[in-house]
Length: 116
Image (tube, rainbow, N blue to C red; front, side):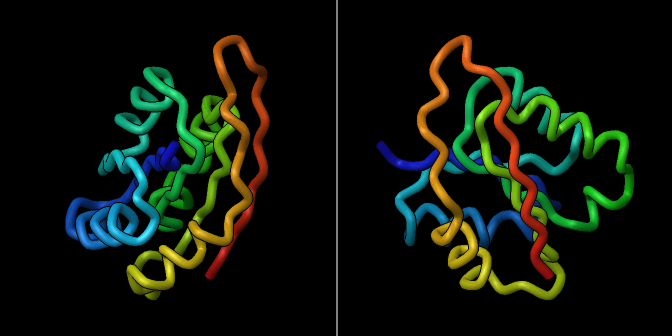
């Protein structure tokens, strides 16, 4: 089963990264440009990995905390998309430990990793 990734970044930044993740990791990638729409996505389905642009997370820490609270079993990586190439982000995603399939009714399991 391919990893399911939620990518939270501006559309301009997200597009090349999403394409690289699809090609390199054969991942199912959903992109969203805002924390609010990301919350909707997290409530709608489970993801194995959430990648968020560090700038979006830092802009509103309360909203970022809500993302963590609603992430389920997904590992969240905050990355600086402004200085990271798509290839580097793919390497980070590939190196991220895989969360087991959370299945229905599983409790939250969050780990926070920050990368420059």
